[in-house]
Every structure is written in C-alpha cells, then in structure tokens.
Image (cartoon, rainbow, N blue to C red; front, top):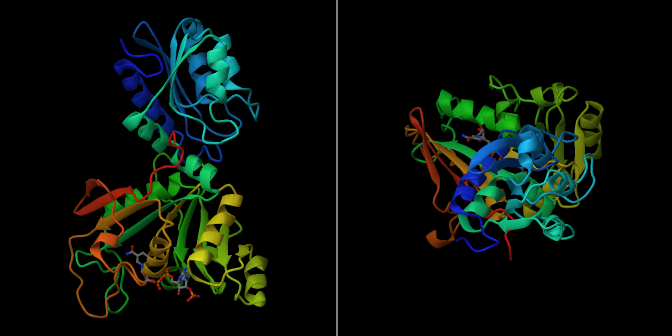
Length: 382
Ligand SMILES: NC(=O)c1ccc[n+]([C@@H]2O[C@H](COP(=O)([O-])OP(=O)(O)OC[C@H]3O[C@@H](n4cnc5c(N)ncnc54)[C@H](OP(=O)(O)O)[C@@H]3O)[C@@H](O)[C@H]2O)c1
C-alpha cells in the first residue's frame, strides 16, 4: 500500500490530467495561478475543473460543481494547495469540506510563506486525508503555475527569452536584413506565446530597427487579453511615430527607462499614451532588474522577451532569464559583420555558458526549437 501522504500511481495520472486542465487557462488567469482539479470516485473521473480567471470560480469548486453529488467520499486531485482565504471568491477548503471529499492530492504547496500549508492543515483538521506530490509530479504541477510562482517568490515576471538564429548563430545579415530567419511554423508559435503571456518585450535597438507591433496575430483560439508591450529603453528614445507608440492608447506600452533618460523624452512618450517607468539605474543588470520589478508591481507575471542581441546578452549575464526558447533555422548567413544572436561579454569558459538542462527539442517546419528552463520554478519544498 502507498504510505499515507503520497499519491498512488492512479492519483499521479490524475494529477497529470489536472496539470493539462490548468494549462487551458494560461494567458487569461493572471494575476491568479493556473490551477486544474480532477475528482475521482471508485477509480472513475466524476468531475473536472480549472480556474478560468480572476473573480471566476477556482479549479476545486469548478470540479466539485461538475461532479455534483458524486463528491461524497471521493478523491480530489488538484495542482495547487487549495486556498484557505477569502479573496474574490470564498475559500476552496470550505467548499472541499462541504462537498464531503474524503481524500485530497496536492500537486504543490502554496508558494506564499504566510499561507503555505494552511490549506492542507485545515483539510487534515477536518478529517480529510491529504497526500502531497513530490519529485517529477511536483515539478510538473509547479511548471503549470510557473508565472504565478515566480512572481510570488521574486516579485518579478517569469522571463522567457526567445531568439531565432541561423545555423551560424546570426540574427541578421551584414546589411541588417532579418526577414525572415525562421519559417512560418516558428513564427506562428511565437504569436501563440505572445497570446499566452502577460507581456512581450524587446530592446530599443529592435524597436528602432524593426518597428514591431508585438501583438499576437492569427492565433486560434483568439487571445482573451492583449499582452502589454514592453521596451527596454534606458534613454527613452522610442520614436513617437513608431507602431508601438501610435497604438499605445489601444494596447498598453510600457517603456522601461533609466536615470539618464531626458525628461522631455519621457514627457513626450507619456503624452502619447505610453506608460514610462523611470528607474534609478542607468544601464546594465541593475537597470534590467529594476525594470522587471516595475513590471511585477503591475502584476505582470510573465514576459516573452524577443531580443535583440544586446538585451538578450544583458539578461543572460544578469541571470534574469528563467526559460530559453531558441529557434535554429537551416540557413548559414556568414559574413564577419553579421550580428550574433547574443552580445555582451559572454562566458570565459564553456562550463560557464548558459545551458538548458535536458532541453525539449521540437521540429517546427524546417526549423528546430530548443526550449527549456535555466532556473527551476520557485516554490519547491525545502
Ligand atoms: N532573430 C532574432 O531573434 C532577433 C530578435 C530581435 C532583434 N533582432 C535584430 O537585432 C537587431 C537589433 O539588435 P540590438 O542588439 O541593437 O537591439 P536590442 O538588444 O533590442 O537593443 C539594444 C539597446 O537596448 C538598450 N538596453 C536596454 N537594456 C540594456 C542593458 N542592460 N544593457 C545594454 N543595453 C541595454 C540599449 O539602448 P541605449 O543604446 O539607448 O542605451 C541598447 O542599445 C535588429 O537588426 C533586429 O532585427 C533579431
């Protein structure tokens, strides 16, 4: 028999299902976590639910409602510890107790120090058996709520850096031509990511060179919300006639500026509807960290940074990248003047290079995507 406190093999399968359900809400759930829940009785799934967004029912009550009378004596498997506080909705622990659930399997504990373990305690005190996942199962449960968990632990959004490079690691030709390095499948996936993130960012060099809109286009299902566009722009030099500024009143744009930004530039951007955050630092790692803090204060929990090479290098050197997504296209650009994907000082030794441990590798048309984490999701059981 499985010792008390650990999920059974069947419950581990249900937890994987709950993780899949949780992911359905990514892109419209923040500032809440993505959470999924499954209720099973006598080996049969009798209810499923996931949290669909702020103010909407949490995953557990949604699954309880779906299960109806079948909750009596059933097992609830949920990706995150049930909440014990009253926020925009009532405490989930109360709903679980009232539904007559006999056993609860928790994917990962609440990340907040002050509430961690409280949901489990309330359930245990009410006579409900509680099992907590560990190892790969707990990692999986944390992964689905990673933007929320990262933000809760650090006050900053989870940063996913995405670059597309040629086989020889270039992101443009020597003449500055960049369209297109990656193929349509990779570009479509980037639009999906944009739709799922709270923010999409670039450095001012890219904003200047490419005049991007940074919106999610041709995405099915259509995005529920529009990601905030962010420019890392120490001198607040984003052009007023850029697509970003021209559309700032419809879809938010945040310019992260530094202490050396000219006040008249800041004022002009603000007058055009841009939200300008002026930090204390003027450049480097401190500037980036401050900018991410400012985004965290706006409850931005995830950001897709699409380069360019200078900002990519600075973020990597500052250890501010949580996830790396690298598209490699089957082309060789060549030329001594063609820019590399990452600028900056770089690693002295290969052992010091940023490395994705066990990356996921995917074929996207003729391109190859390598994706993975540079840092674990915070919130593991110490
Ligand atoms: N293939 C791809 O995946 C890809 C992706 C993006 C861009 N690109 C290409 O890359 C080129 C632009 O490259 P880039 O390197 O100039 O652009 P970038 O990285 O987008 O922007 C560089 C600028 O960002 C500012 N910056 C913000 N934080 C910084 C920090 N911590 N350290 C240093 N600078 C910081 C600096 O502005 P100040 O000079 O005002 O200080 C710097 O000049 C374009 O040709 C673009 O098309 C390719």
